[in-house]
Structure formats: C-alpha cells, structure tokens
Image 1 (cartoon, rainbow, N blue to C red):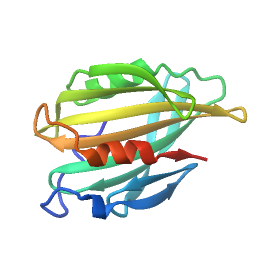
Image 2: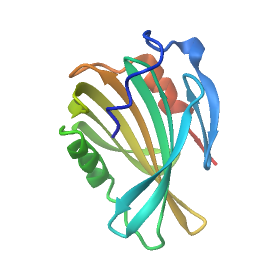
Image 3: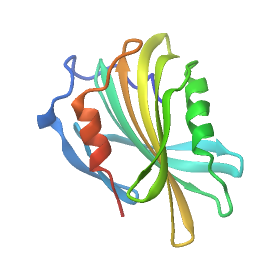
Image 4: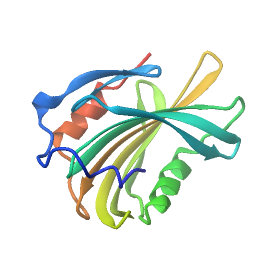
Length: 166
C-alpha cells in the first residue's frame, strides 16, 4: 500500500478527461496521466519477487497498479496481502470483501486510517491473483486520497473497471 505517493505534481484532483490507456506488464488500464514506472523488490513467503509498479500522483491523490510475478508453487493469501499492506502504513483494513475479477480470485478493501511519511490518508485497494499458463501474477490496484476516512471518487471505479489482463 502506498500512502507516501501523494505529493508533488498539480494541486488539483484528477478529472475524467485526464484518463488514458496505459500498457503494463501483462495488462492495460486507464490512469489519469502518464505513470512513472519502477521495479520494486517485494518479499513473499516463497522469496523476493520484482514488482512492476506504475504510479500517477498529485498533491491530493495517487493511482497505482502493480504486477508481481510469483515464484512457482507460491500460494497467495489475498486477505494476508491486504492486511500486510495495511500494517505497512500503520492502518487497518475495513470493508474487506472477497470477490472475483474477470473470473480470477480477488479481494478488496479500504484502509481509512493509513499513515506514512507524516501524512494521513485513505487507501482503497483491490488485489487479483491471475493463474494461467502455469504462471501466477499478483495485481494490485490502489487509489490513495489524503485525509482519514476519505471517499473514493467515480474515477477510482473507472480505474478498477478498466483493467484488462492479457
């Protein structure tokens, strides 16, 4: 979960007209601008994996999507992924729900009390486990808004619905 992502950039909130298609590692998604891309090591119970992380942010909010290929034989506990991310920002998962996305197991939740780098905010997150062709990839979609217990805008729902796994 990324809270420190907010900061820098324009002072206004993103608008529907800002959305553009982003092609990532095995997916496309609509994000409000051209994302910064980085590779981040993520520790798992089966070893460290390299996640491709795409982030678009401004002073008030951030959109993030990541793709993490999992080692062969790894088992992903999506509930544990959410709670571990919440712990990383000294928060607690609320509205935790198991779901599916494009037929794949998914879990989503909200962290209304996230804290990181001196800031407070609300993190909305969906994690999806895609297993096909003998490989597994864990996708994270996150929206972060400054302010405790903030609400997600319609743009977040558009962001979630736009993900196309290839």
